[in-house]
Image (cartoon, rainbow, N blue to C red):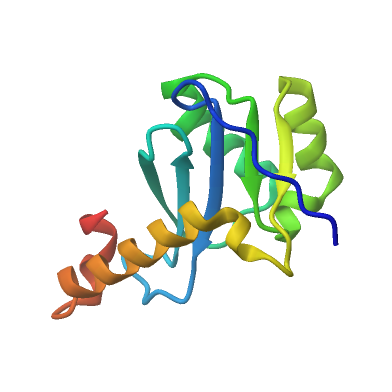
Length: 140
Protein backbone atom coordinates (compact mmCIF):
# COMPACT_ATOMS: atom_id res chain seq x y z
CA UNK A 1 0.00 0.00 0.00
CA UNK A 2 1.07 3.57 -0.72
CA UNK A 3 1.18 5.90 2.29
CA UNK A 4 0.87 9.67 2.11
CA UNK A 5 1.73 12.08 4.87
CA UNK A 6 -1.19 13.94 6.37
CA UNK A 7 -1.69 17.60 5.47
CA UNK A 8 -0.61 20.00 8.21
CA UNK A 9 -3.56 22.04 9.49
CA UNK A 10 -3.03 25.81 9.72
CA UNK A 11 -6.18 26.72 11.62
CA UNK A 12 -8.59 25.11 14.09
CA UNK A 13 -11.23 22.72 12.77
CA UNK A 14 -9.88 22.65 9.20
CA UNK A 15 -8.64 19.06 9.45
CA UNK A 16 -10.54 16.48 11.47
CA UNK A 17 -10.10 12.85 12.34
CA UNK A 18 -12.93 10.59 13.46
CA UNK A 19 -13.44 7.18 14.96
CA UNK A 20 -15.91 5.25 17.08
CA UNK A 21 -15.58 3.76 20.54
CA UNK A 22 -17.65 0.58 20.62
CA UNK A 23 -18.15 -2.33 22.98
CA UNK A 24 -19.34 -0.07 25.79
CA UNK A 25 -22.00 -1.14 28.28
CA UNK A 26 -25.37 0.46 27.41
CA UNK A 27 -26.02 3.78 29.16
CA UNK A 28 -29.44 5.36 28.59
CA UNK A 29 -29.47 3.13 25.47
CA UNK A 30 -26.23 4.74 24.17
CA UNK A 31 -23.69 2.09 23.14
CA UNK A 32 -21.25 3.94 20.86
CA UNK A 33 -19.22 7.15 21.12
CA UNK A 34 -18.21 9.14 18.05
CA UNK A 35 -14.83 10.80 18.63
CA UNK A 36 -14.10 13.85 16.45
CA UNK A 37 -10.62 15.36 16.88
CA UNK A 38 -9.47 18.74 15.56
CA UNK A 39 -5.97 17.95 14.32
CA UNK A 40 -4.82 21.56 14.86
CA UNK A 41 -5.88 22.25 18.47
CA UNK A 42 -6.39 18.60 19.55
CA UNK A 43 -9.84 19.59 20.85
CA UNK A 44 -12.25 16.65 20.93
CA UNK A 45 -16.00 16.32 20.52
CA UNK A 46 -17.53 13.17 21.99
CA UNK A 47 -20.98 12.29 20.70
CA UNK A 48 -22.93 9.46 22.36
CA UNK A 49 -24.82 7.32 19.85
CA UNK A 50 -27.29 4.46 20.21
CA UNK A 51 -25.64 2.44 17.41
CA UNK A 52 -23.05 2.76 14.68
CA UNK A 53 -24.42 5.35 12.26
CA UNK A 54 -25.01 5.07 8.53
CA UNK A 55 -23.41 7.55 6.14
CA UNK A 56 -26.63 9.56 6.15
CA UNK A 57 -26.66 9.56 9.96
CA UNK A 58 -23.02 10.72 9.98
CA UNK A 59 -23.84 13.64 7.71
CA UNK A 60 -26.60 14.77 10.08
CA UNK A 61 -24.53 14.19 13.23
CA UNK A 62 -21.54 16.15 11.92
CA UNK A 63 -23.73 18.98 10.66
CA UNK A 64 -25.42 19.30 14.06
CA UNK A 65 -22.53 18.53 16.43
CA UNK A 66 -19.44 19.86 14.63
CA UNK A 67 -20.01 21.92 11.47
CA UNK A 68 -22.67 24.08 13.15
CA UNK A 69 -20.14 25.06 15.82
CA UNK A 70 -16.88 25.22 13.88
CA UNK A 71 -17.69 25.53 10.19
CA UNK A 72 -16.79 23.13 7.40
CA UNK A 73 -13.41 21.39 7.47
CA UNK A 74 -11.11 20.96 4.49
CA UNK A 75 -10.28 17.32 5.26
CA UNK A 76 -11.72 14.46 7.32
CA UNK A 77 -9.71 11.36 8.14
CA UNK A 78 -11.60 8.25 9.17
CA UNK A 79 -11.18 4.51 9.23
CA UNK A 80 -12.57 2.33 6.47
CA UNK A 81 -15.91 1.72 8.15
CA UNK A 82 -18.85 1.09 5.84
CA UNK A 83 -20.29 4.55 6.52
CA UNK A 84 -17.07 6.19 5.26
CA UNK A 85 -16.37 4.16 2.13
CA UNK A 86 -19.83 4.34 0.57
CA UNK A 87 -20.77 6.62 -2.30
CA UNK A 88 -23.28 8.70 -0.30
CA UNK A 89 -20.59 9.75 2.22
CA UNK A 90 -18.16 10.72 -0.53
CA UNK A 91 -20.92 12.61 -2.37
CA UNK A 92 -21.91 14.47 0.81
CA UNK A 93 -18.31 15.52 1.48
CA UNK A 94 -17.61 16.42 -2.16
CA UNK A 95 -20.74 18.58 -2.26
CA UNK A 96 -19.39 20.54 0.74
CA UNK A 97 -15.84 20.70 -0.62
CA UNK A 98 -14.44 18.37 2.05
CA UNK A 99 -11.63 16.00 1.13
CA UNK A 100 -12.08 12.46 2.42
CA UNK A 101 -8.99 10.59 3.65
CA UNK A 102 -9.10 7.01 4.85
CA UNK A 103 -6.62 5.51 7.27
CA UNK A 104 -5.11 2.29 6.06
CA UNK A 105 -6.20 -1.01 7.55
CA UNK A 106 -2.53 -1.95 7.31
CA UNK A 107 -1.46 1.22 9.10
CA UNK A 108 -4.16 2.39 11.55
CA UNK A 109 -1.54 4.57 13.26
CA UNK A 110 -2.10 7.07 10.46
CA UNK A 111 -5.01 8.21 12.60
CA UNK A 112 -2.98 8.10 15.82
CA UNK A 113 -4.51 11.21 17.44
CA UNK A 114 -8.00 9.78 17.39
CA UNK A 115 -6.81 6.38 18.61
CA UNK A 116 -4.95 8.10 21.46
CA UNK A 117 -8.04 10.13 22.43
CA UNK A 118 -10.22 7.02 22.27
CA UNK A 119 -7.89 5.26 24.70
CA UNK A 120 -7.94 8.24 27.09
CA UNK A 121 -11.75 8.44 26.95
CA UNK A 122 -12.16 4.71 27.55
CA UNK A 123 -9.80 4.84 30.55
CA UNK A 124 -11.52 7.87 32.11
CA UNK A 125 -15.00 6.46 31.55
CA UNK A 126 -13.98 3.19 33.19
CA UNK A 127 -12.86 5.13 36.26
CA UNK A 128 -15.92 7.39 36.35
CA UNK A 129 -18.38 4.57 35.77
CA UNK A 130 -16.77 1.75 37.71
CA UNK A 131 -19.66 1.61 40.18
CA UNK A 132 -22.50 2.11 37.69
CA UNK A 133 -22.00 1.74 33.94
CA UNK A 134 -25.43 3.27 33.33
CA UNK A 135 -23.94 6.71 34.09
CA UNK A 136 -21.56 6.52 31.13
CA UNK A 137 -23.54 8.87 28.85
CA UNK A 138 -23.84 11.43 31.66
CA UNK A 139 -20.07 11.46 32.14
CA UNK A 140 -19.34 12.48 28.57
